[in-house]
Structures are given as structure tokens and as C-alpha cells.
Image 1 (cartoon, rainbow, N blue to C red):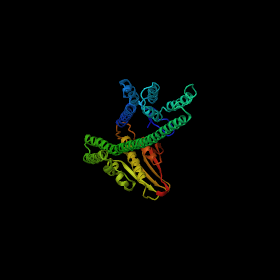
Image 2: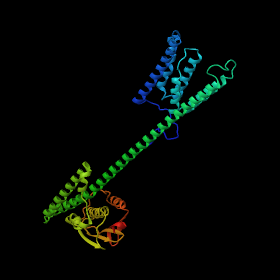
Image 3: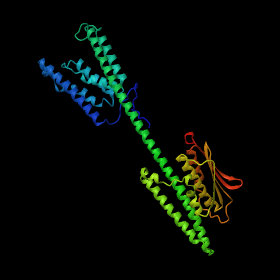
Image 4: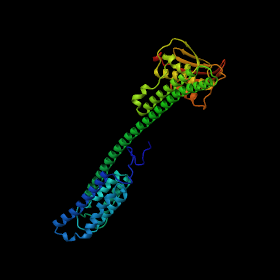
Length: 407
């Protein structure tokens, strides 16, 4: 996942957030606009009534009192502009000799908002400038001793402004922590989703391999037997019925296996356990279809047969099944040897075939039999080699390492 530009981290500024605010944020902004407007206008009116000076609260004064609160609506989008506007309106009102009252509310909210929403420099600049002006004004002729401009008021103003800055920094830090937690949570969700997608892709790849291995083998048998049946029929020789029987059985098994694979695609959790799984413990059953296709297969087992890890057993069975399928496809029905060598630290599976028979009926297409076998073997940390090897026409050899706990 690529973090958005607005993503905040602890210790960094939380930049201005452009775009539409959420409903909750708009409600908060509207609340601040209403509160500061009520305090501005209501406070001035109350003071004017107390001083019997209500006549000075003109529509123009009320309009000026409303500008600052109205600017707070944009405090998230342009915090430094809102702060500058509130400062300008507030000091214009104060220095203009207008009716007194608690008119600092919009500037206070804008100052804290600037710290929180990424315009800290503007907030600190306003604080420094305010203190500098307040301190410098006391040095001007006629200002010495004026009410509100002595040293004690300067200290009180500095303390108040520093409190506002600290309060804004606290809120900013909490926002940053919340955003960082949200970002990490979202990153975790994205990582989990990516993991699920990878697992789904691996499941689809496994099912595709199953489809290739199982159905491809049966189709090779069907092709060989169909060709043999046609040849026997054309030459009026016996054996057509046997060939058709093998075709029927192989096609039936292929249809059954395809149905299981389709069920696995629809409901992987329930049907996956029923997928066809060739095993070395049932080597004769593994070779039945190849032998039914007319292939002369001899099995040679060396070492001490033992229980294997499920993954190794499945891969070894698939290598044998795919190798026999390739023999049927490309070499007809030559003599073939399946050699299984059990060793303490590894399992070696080897399929050798003699030269192709003259009546070899090769199926069209190259397929991905050998690359698929190699990929399967490599998932178990093994190696696979395939090619001509004297005195055989073709040899496939897979070596699967066995971990110590399975020896």
C-alpha cells in the first residue's frame, strides 16, 4: 500500500487536508462558527447594555463581528489564511475603537487550528508578532502606563499564548497518533488482503496443475486407445471392444475428476479433500490407466519403503503420472520403467522409456508437462531433470529431499 500524502507520522506536521471534509468534521466546524459568533455578538451586546451604550452596536459592527467566525468554516482547508484573516479582523475591531467585548474567540480557535492542521509556522509567527507589538507599544510616547499595556499584562498575554500553542501541539500530536494507528491498521488490512489474493492465486494454480495432470493423462490414454481401435477396425483384427472399454473407463474417470475440480473451484473448503491424489503407497493403482492404455510398465523399488510427507508423496505421484502421460503422447507404447529409490535423506523417482514404437500415435501440442513437473518438485526443495539418457530414449529423474523429522 502506498500511503497518501495526508498520512501523518508522529513528530511530523499534519499537513492541510484538501478536499471535502467528513460529515462529523463539517458539524464540528459549524459548531465553532456558531459558538464564536454567539460569543462575539452576544458578548458585545451584553457589555454595551451594561455600559448603556447599545446604540453603538450598529449593523456594521455586527457584520464585522461575524466575519471572524465565518472564516473558521475553512480552518481545515487553509489554516494559515483563516488565521491571518481572524487576526486582521480582530485587531481592526479592537484598534477601531468599536464597542468592547470578548472578541478574541475566532482568533484563538484559528490559532489552535493552525497548529493542528499544518500551519504551525503561521501560529508561532502570530504569537511572536503579538508579543513584540505588545512589548514595543509600551515604549511609545503616550502608551506608558496605559491600561492593559504594562509589564504584568505582557507576562499574562505571553502565558496565555504559550498555553494556546501547547494546547494546539497536544491536539496535533494526538491526531498524529490516531492517524498513524489508522495507517498501520489499514496497512495490516491491505497486507492481509494481499495474502488472501496470493493464496487464491496459488489455489488456482494448484487446481490448474491438477487439471493438467489428471485430465491430460486420461485424454492421452483415450487418444491412444481410439487410434488403436480405429487401426484394429480398419484391419479387421480383434481388440476393438477392449480398446473401446478402456476409452469408456478413461473418459469416465476424466469426467469424474473434472467434476471434483469444478466442485473445488465452487467450494474449495469442502471439495479440495476429494481431489485426485496419486500416492506411491498405491503404485499399482497409479499405473492402472497407463497399463490399460497398452503401456508396458515395470516398477523397480529400492531402499526401504516408508511413509512420506503428504506433499512429497503427491509430487512424486504426479511426476510418475505426468511422465507416463508423456510416454503415451510422444512415444506410443514402448517398454517403460518406473524406479523408486527410498533413501534416508531423500526420495528419488525416475521414469525411463525405450525407443518409441513404430505405431506411436503422438497427440498434438507441446503442453507444459516438464515445466509443470519441475515447478512441483521445486516447491518441495527438489530438482528435476529430463532428457535422453543412454541406454534409454528418454528419462525423467526427480530428487526430493526429506527433512529429518520425516526420516
